[in-house]
Amino acid sequence: MERFDAVVVGGGIIGLASAWRAEQRGLRVCVCERGEPGAGATRVAAGVLAPDPETPGFTALAQRSSELWPAFADELGGVGYTRCGSLLLAWSSAALGPGWLDAETARAFEPGIAPDCAGAFLLDQDAQVDPRQTAAALRERVRDVRAGADVVEVGPHEIELADGSHLRADRVVLAAGAWSARRLAPRLPVRPVKGQTLRLRGPLPATRIIRGEGVYVVPRASGETVVGATVEEAGFDESATQAATELLLGRASRAVPAVAELELVEASAGLRPGTPDDAPLIGEWEELVVATGHYRNGILLAPITADAVAALLVGDEPPPETLPFDPNRF
Image (cartoon, rainbow, N blue to C red; front, side, top):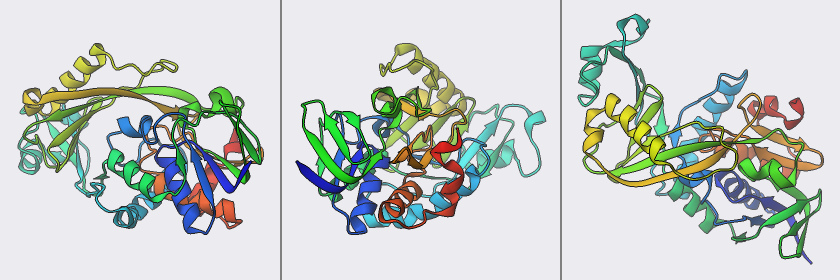
């Protein structure tokens, strides 16, 4: 039976980044992924690096991880990281408060926004990264990543695969995203939340991330524009639908009319791991190390989560910003 210092269950950005940081600490690590590494929620994600929920403590966690991203991206190289900023649009002047730009100033920043936009708020610290490139770079750096390794049972020091084989480890890390609780840890409070995104090609409709009503538009230097994302309580259904595609295109074109002229090249859906407070689960839980429940912020929180997992695996204190997100809080 093969033995490792740590086995990571789940090959999305969280599992891969955690394994990479653990290897940098001198550990022998194996990543087991039921499908293709990076092909789940990571592949569907738009890669917007901006905080989402208002859970207590989340801003500090998100801010710290955001600060880690430039160095994290530099280490990986060529993952499309850029601090492009974002523009949050308002459709009524009544919604404009202190710090908001009026319509004329907003269009000076982004001429392509809707002509009836009443104003906007500039978030110049927001950034973006290409999750697909990031996952590919991480996979290249982690020594032992196993695709098609469907884990059916986890224990503190051993996992069982669907083919009946077993792997032993000093520690097991559960980073299986929305699938973490379905078979492996049923008591873990994680549920799937479906999200659909679109990928378009053509002239970039903006230079910054544009956030409209229920939509964001992410222009990439590669010539790709990503539009997202739906939020659907649909169980484990991962199918992309025409209805969701039309909804996103309609909302995106409302915010940035030039989107309507772009070519749709891909519609995809994935399952985000949600929790009761929409905040992550990072820490020790029933003799496992847990790193899941990142909901809509898995890409943003990958650097700090990886640092926390690696620290726990070698017996060090994790980053203090992760402490409020102990899996035992529920």
